[in-house]
Amino acid sequence: MSRIQLALNVADVEEATAFYTRLLGVPPAKTRPGYANFSVVDPPLKLVLLEDPTAGGTLNHLGIEVGSVADVDAARARLTDAGLTGTDEQGTCCYARQDKVWVEGAPDGERWEVYTVLADSEVFGEPVAQQPAAAGCC
Image 1 (tube, rainbow, N blue to C red):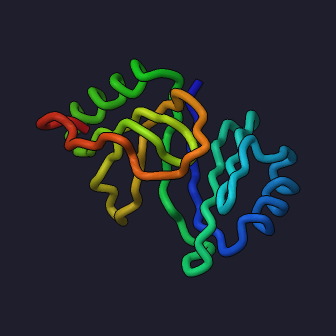
Image 2: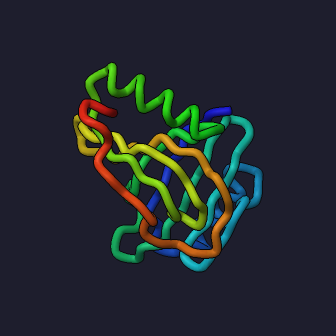
Image 3: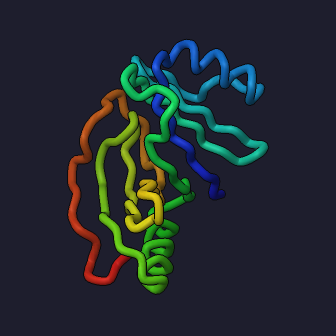
């Protein structure tokens, strides 16, 4: 299963969570202080809300959630073949342990990630390990 992820900066995560619960018709799948995410079946969407009172109403990043590390690896190879560059990342991010590749080079500077969730986490933090993607890699 793949789905698009939309990560938004919001001024008040509780207010935004209430709005998106009504809009999407589903409650959040996970909430933490300053954070909420929704796993919407129809249309397939992962909506992530990140509280930032100074940047409410702005895009944080975009992503494509995939089902496995093999799917991340396949996406990395496809993106490399397409001439896109990026950064590999493993570790804790957004209250989950994830493997991902960040893609750079969108015309307007949007940040995209292709990722898979490996496990839940109680920690929101920097990735445990991060390194440039292999030469020519996505």
